[in-house]
Amino acid sequence: MQKLPIGIQTFSQIREENYIYIDKTHLAFDLIENYKYAFLSRPRRFGKSLFLDTLHNIFEGNRELFEGLAVYDKWNWEERYPVIKISWGGSDYVSLEETKHKAFRVLKENQKRLGIVCEDDFSPAGCLEELIQKAYDKYQKRVVVLVDEYDKPILNNIDNTKLALQNRNFLRGFYEVLKDNDAYIQFAFLTGISKFSKANIFSGLNNIEDISLTPKYATICGYTQKDIENDFKEHLEGADLEKVKEWYNGYNFLGENVYNPFDILQFIDNNFFFKNYWWESGNPSFLITLLKQKPYNIPELENITVGDELLNSFEIENLRLEVLLFQSGYLTIEKFYNDPEFGINEYKLRVPNKEVNISLNRLFLDYLTNGIRVERSIIKALFEADLEKFKEIFISLFASIPYNNYVKNNIGEYEGYYASVFYAYLAASGLKIIAEDVTNSSRIDLTILIQDKVYIIEFKVDSDNALQQIKEKNYAKKYKNEAKEIYLVGICFDSEEKNIKSFEWEKL
Image (cartoon, rainbow, N blue to C red; front, side, top):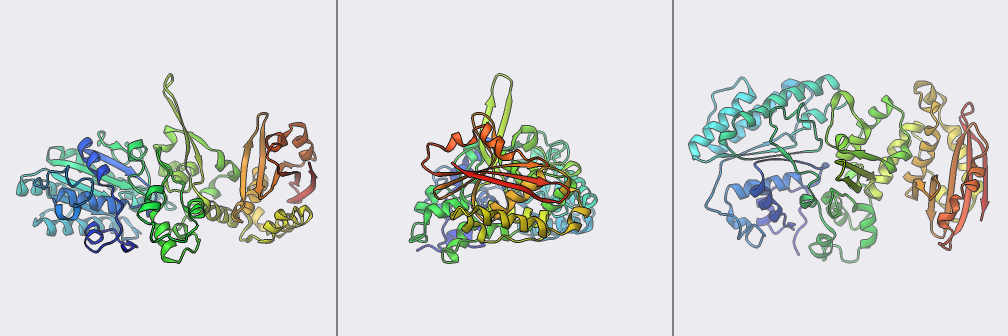
C-alpha cells in the first residue's frame, strides 16, 4: 500500500519514496505548451506548492521521476532549463524590512543552486533581474520562473492596511522585473490565494493569463471523486464515502467538483474521524474584521450572484466579503451563467461542503452573539417536532446576548441581524437548511430539512404577520408532494427588547 503524502510538497520525495501521487502532469504539459505567463488562484492547502514543484522537475529534465505518468512520453527530456523558484512561505511579514529580507534570502538560495553570484545586494528587484540574465548567459537557455504564494506578504497583513499596501507596492516592483526581462524568460507561473487587479500587483505584466477559472484546469489542484475511489481505495476501505463527500467535496472552479487534499489525508490518518481539518489549519480572523466594517445578512451568503468584476479583483483599500470568501475557499461556484449577446458572466456562489458550513457559521455566531455556543438540544427538538422547546432555546439565546454587544456595534440595528443569528446557530449545528429558499411566488426566509420533516420559517421585525405571510404566499406548496410533515413557523422580533416578540406555528 502506498504511503499518504501528509505534509509533503516535494515531488521527488513523493515519487522516490512510494507516496500516493495524483497525476496532474497532463495538465502541467498542456499549461507549458499553451502559455508563457500564467497565474493560478486556489485556496490554501490545495496542492499548489506540489504542482509548482512538479513543473520545476519537468523543466529540469528529471525524467526518471515521471515514469508511468502522463507527461513521460510527451516531454523532450533533453531540453533542460534553469529554474528560479520563489516561495513566500515560512515568514510572518510583520514589516516591509522582513519582506525584503525574505526576498534576498530566497534569491540567494537560487543563486547557490544555479551556481551564480549576484552583485546587487541593495534591491531585491535588481537582484532578481541580474539572476535572470546571468542564468540565461550561463546556461544558454531561457529561464523558468516559478512563484509560490505570491501574495502572502499582503494577505498576512490584511487587517493592517498600511503594511499590506507597502508590501503590495514592493511586490509590484519585484514582479515588474518579469516584464522587463521577457527576452530571457521561457515560462513564468505564479500561484496564490487572492487575485489582485493587474493595475495593482501585475502592473505592466499585461500578458499574464489567469487560468484560475479556465474549465480545462478546474482539477489542476485537488482530488476528484475518481481519485478518491481509485487511488485512495485501500486507504478508505470501510469509510462512509457518501458522508466523506458531504463533508469534504464540493469545491468547484467551473469543472468537476474536487476535494481539498489536506482534508482527505487528515481524515484517513485520523481513522475516519470527521472533523474540520482544513478550517482548523488556518486563521480566518480577517472575516471578523470585515464584519465589523459593514453589517452583512449572513443567510444571503448562500445565494450570492456576482460578476467577473467581483471575482477578478481583490483590493486592499476596498475589501469585499464576497470576494474574500470566494478566493479563500469559504464559498465556491454553484452555477455559471453566460449571456453571449451582452457579454455578461454571472457566478452563483455557495458554501462548498459541511465542514466549511459548520465552521463558517460557528465563526459568524461567535461574532454575532459574543461567544454563545450551540446547544445540541436544538437538533433533538426538531427531530421530535418539539416547537415549544425550539422556541425556548432561541428566546434563551437572544436573552443571553450581552447588552454591550449591541452598544459596541450597530449590528442589532439592522433587520438581517436576527435572521443572521438564527441562521448561523442552526447551520453551526450541522442541520441542513436553505436560506432564501426560492418558490414560484417568492422566497422563504429559511427552510429546515430534517428526516421526514420540513420547517418553513418566516422572520419579521416589529411586526406580527410572519405566519400569515407564509399562508398567503403558499410557501408550503413547494414541499407538499414530498410526503413529509410540514411545519409553518412565524417568528417576530422586537427591536427594542432584542428578542422574540411572538412565535406562532402550525402543522399542515
